[in-house]
Length: 225
Image 1 (cartoon, rainbow, N blue to C red):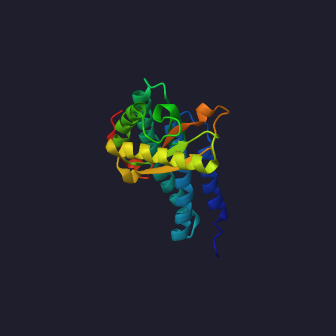
Image 2: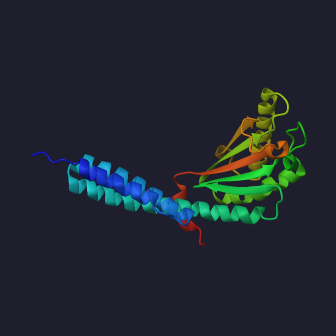
């Protein structure tokens, strides 16, 4: 008689959902929950595909949850360390702010600190900010970096996009000069397309977005915090 497995797959999926939706108090716990939920779902599918019975599905879900939870926990911890170091080195800066969305970090810098009006030549103040953040980026190599240039809405859209790209390229070059591997960095010119305020000054900004690679979790245990 052929065994029916949808109930076990549903149970594994429910485990994933419940784990991911539980109240969480830290980024590290969120990483653990997300990793556990995804691992359980993938493990259940693999267990069913290999064993073709309920027991195999549940065993696969359990192993997947364990492995996924560990990976998610370590990834969150890796970004926790990096976030803290970024906040430390930028604490004295009046031009920078740090925010985090799950495991993605964004450092935002006021545009006038980096560039004169209508210029893509990096100012000394911008060079100092780049040197500060580069010290941290060099230590945490399991991340990708996007440098985004942003302008206000004065001037034509085409001109603003081109200027913002030139500015992003200038910051990318400065980061590489400070020892950050250029293959980790992409430069994007957003122009006026992503305003954050009605204030022109607030919209003129440079954002450095730091995104973890999959290998980041394996590196977390190397940091003795």
